[in-house]
Image (tube, rainbow, N blue to C red; front, side, top):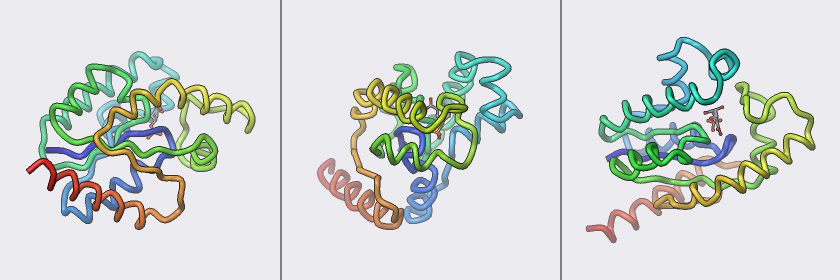
Length: 175
Ligand code: S3P
């Protein structure tokens, strides 16, 4: 069984995924990294040259690839849980954890770092508006996760402890 971390851009999926994998002694995979490796292009380049629809196809292929493996901790791109085909694979092969953040946290955490085409090239106010809009649309999909964790704080170790304790409770109750 895999553990899938889902949530908006800047929700901490990669940071917490890496820490969680370490604590559980499992391998960590980031589907955004896998897509870039397979396509030999950055995500921004894929969006620019082939468009979002093509990116979503590559994303589904990479999810299918990780879903065939076992005992991974997987960080997924923010848009992955919206597609039913992806969601089915997550449900059938693992447990999902939604890292919920406020629009303000998402904005602050996506200021630096890799290009995110869906919220790129805008000023502060416009970026916050587009984050709010997308987050509202996606919340119903994200909330289908088995575990929901608020991640607006700035101590990843603390959040990992919370995830581990929630996992233990869930595993105990399913025995
Ligand atoms: C996207 C999120 C990004 C990346 C792509 C699209 C989205 O991943 O997959 O830019 O639709 O929310 P992160 O959530 O890891 O930033």
